[in-house]
Length: 294
Image (cartoon, rainbow, N blue to C red):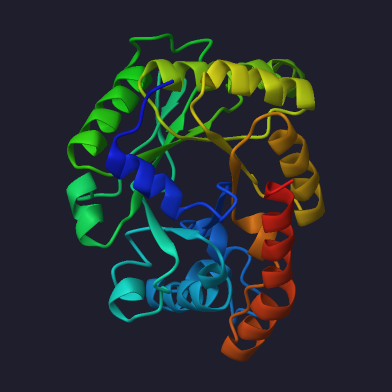
């Protein structure tokens, strides 16, 4: 286990329910959030940053303020959601440092920072916790590799800045693989990715559902006492609830969910958006909270 500092422990507490289980509403998406906005006049890609910021603000008001924490991006949502008093005082702010998309070198993906962002700047935006996404192929990226070094360096920087870091890992299919070959490797890639990140110093993980109770147990073992939360990866709500129940029963510490909760609850019309978030997304969040508590 990679021990947390006192400040990091407080950060972890801020994103947990009273039970000590993690629940975070993920809303740091940009283009993928635009793509699910209903009733948009014209193409959803034409939604402006200002319009998307309004949508995110309503998502916070009507949904995320009922959760322990919200994950937001520093490009569209911040700092105005904090400055305008939209974020409730009892909801912690997790700031994602990763930009949309990725760079590819030698067939391997690498995360990029939001231009101009840093841990220190995120703190000035009001961050209680930091999140950074890393694309991982642990079969090609052993300890000491570039991604290992990037995780190690950011963990150290966050510790120095006295703020907790959530390390999010996403594995992916290589261009040279068939879908069947990747599917056969998927669980091991999630498990070995957790092991790689913990070896690099990670203290809190956000991971894909590895596919089964047995694989979840293996992730818990590979994490060696480092808590991990499962992400929704855009699956439907009912499927995610089942995944969360299985993962929690095998040692998972909670859930960080975005599209599984709100992907069909975002309308371009403000009144419709409020109604959908209140009557459709919020009950899902409450069900997720119960599932996380087992």
